[in-house]
Image 1 (cartoon, one colour):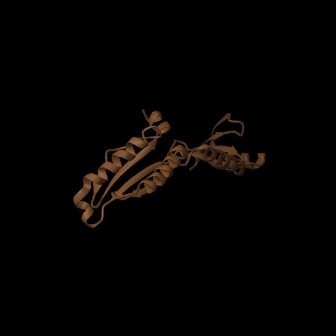
Image 2 (spheres, one colour):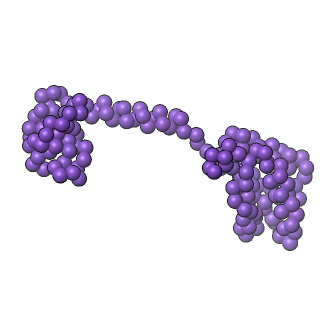
Image 3 (tube, one colour):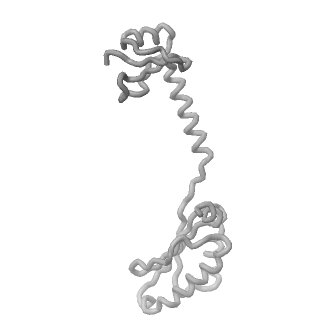
Length: 163
C-alpha cells in the first residue's frame, strides 16, 4: 500500500497521498489513521478518533437493542381427555402469552390407546382455536408429528402488521 485516498477529520477530501505522509498528518493532529475502504483503488483512509467512533457505535447498538421487542415462543401441552378447569387454566395462560406479544405453540399429546381417538383431540384443538380467535391468529395449519398435533398462534397485532 504505497498511496491512500485521505479524508480529513471533518470529512473533507485531502487527495491521494503516500501512506507515510497520511500517518504523519494523523499524528500531527493527534488522531488515528483508519482504513475505511480497503477494496478501493487506492484504499480510502480517514483521520479520526477511533476510540470515540467505536464508543458511538456501541452506544447506537445499545439504543437499538433497547427499542426492539424480544418475542418468545411459549408452549402449552394438552391431552385429549382434559378436564374443564385444567382447560380454562391453560387457556388463561395462552391468552396471557398472546397479550404479552409472545408466539404460542399448542401441542396435543396422545398416549397409548388415545391414538385411536384422534378426533377427540381435534375437537379440543378446535375449541382452543375458537376461544383464542380474538387474541391470536392461527399461524399455520395443524401439524401431526408422531403422537402429537401442534398449532402455532401469533398475537393479533403481529398478524395485522405482517399483512
